[in-house]
Length: 204
Image 1 (tube, rainbow, N blue to C red):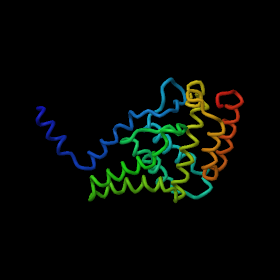
Image 2: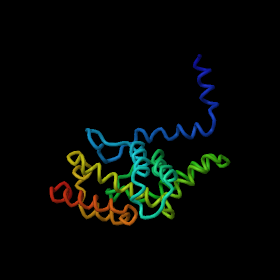
Image 3: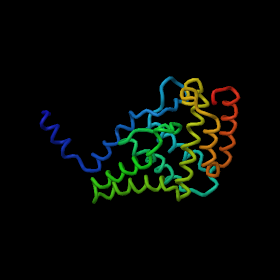
């Protein structure tokens, strides 16, 4: 197949497939949390996949009944905007300013580029549902988005973002407090991890 023929095939891809490929950067965008074991940091796509699996496995911890399939979809898409604006470290007080506005603008632009595409509209609507935090599924996934980083940082604490960035225990507790009511008994597991990390001086 000639280069010209290959180029024509790529130029004629269905609109939805082009949009899908636009999320490829999520496989490379690096977060600050470590993997459970290993030396490198997790990528956004890995984080989103883990939250989707967490929504499936941990659904019974939700104090509210949830649609597990919908929660998994929200988990997969909750950081979709980061394909366009990158990841923002939760404990970076400077970088966090304007984060929501940047992400909302990116997703609005995505919708505007494909105004008549139902699939793109569906994707943006699901992302927006997570951001709005008005459904049990969105609230539970937000809880998983707090739980999983705590577990990863505690389990690989020498390579954790806590140690690297000098994160304070009270700041982690503050984030947990916002979602405590959404994750049931798992909040107590997080409490134990935070308290132990503080005692071991891995958290300030």
